[in-house]
Picture 1 (tube, rainbow, N blue to C red):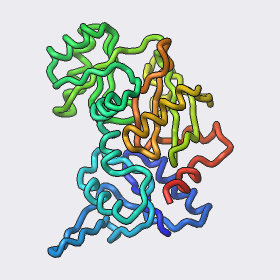
Picture 2: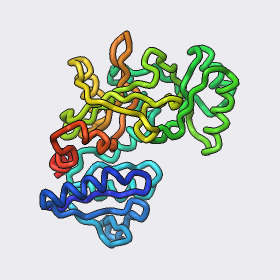
Picture 3: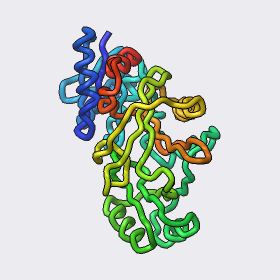
Length: 286
């Protein structure tokens, strides 16, 4: 029994935590370097995955990120043929793409924040923002930790926000209303093995308006209502994820899904729980 734990330079907390948990439990680990992960296909059709350390062979595959590593997508598909994974590669790709996530949630009837998916055309985005009503939030379809997300309170700030996002290259633009009744506050629920294991309410630290921990937000442990529990499980199921982080907004009209992450950083939530979250994720991944 060997657990493959993918590592990448953008998010080190989760793999480091899982490696430490594996050491405590005596679980053999094979760390996998996502930036160097490649696929070899022999003339007779055999496909193998390898990184800078050599071929990768494992019976389990820990949760992973894929955005930014297109070559790794194919290698992880090969690994997933023989290694158990909570999250199929195709489900991770869905979660990595906020636009694709919104469409899939809509197909499944999961309540979410209103979402408009637009071409990167300033005039069209401005027209959509005016129809929604300011303030609005604009974001790229890919991103994490609050990157590539901007708030626009008026047409002038929208133009600035789009100029900043355009610097990253072409792509779809997501436009959403800022839910002012929830300004700076969101709920993060982490589930693994199909069960919710941790929930916190996050509060942005002014002047930051995004409630992500990487941006300095504070958090406290909370419980989900029955409706919120159903919403979290429904969102993960819609995307085919056994392990996920689901961000909710508690609106007057009921809870709404804001985002779904296939490899959430649960490590900041550990101080609010006696149970070892990393060990729970590791056990569910074997």
